[in-house]
Amino acid sequence: METNVNDDTYQIKTNVNKKLSKELGKHEITFDQDIIDWLPPKEHGLNNSNVIIPSQYISFIHNNNKSLDIDYFTIIKDDIRNFIPLDCYKLKYISSLSHDDKNEIINIFNECIKVIHKVI
Image 1 (cartoon, one colour):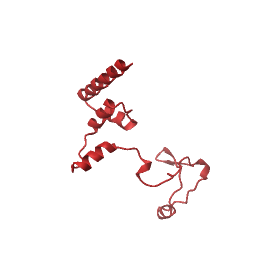
Image 2: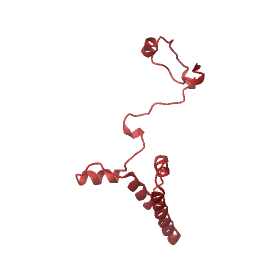
Image 3: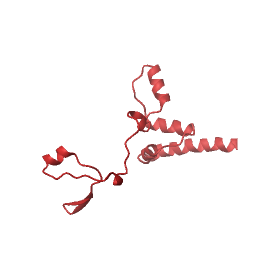
Image 4: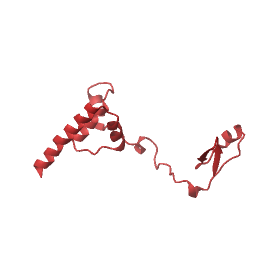
């Protein structure tokens, strides 16, 4: 179903809350389940999300009674040093860094490539 609001086209792809529709004076909009491509998670909790702070940092903080004051830039540098692929969020974060910080990451990456080259 499509609706025009201020000459913009919006496509609604989910069922609309019945009470909210009634309060807004709108008719109830429902859809066939076949066109909804989202599936609910099989289990609840954080297991459905990507890890933001790796477990090695959490255990270090817990064991040393420190607060959660972690620099995401440091995590990315450690991931590169440990040959851990960067996810889309880390790559996006890198794109927002200063040129000096990007150069530091490139230098770390280059040192890692040297190690791989020696091993091969």
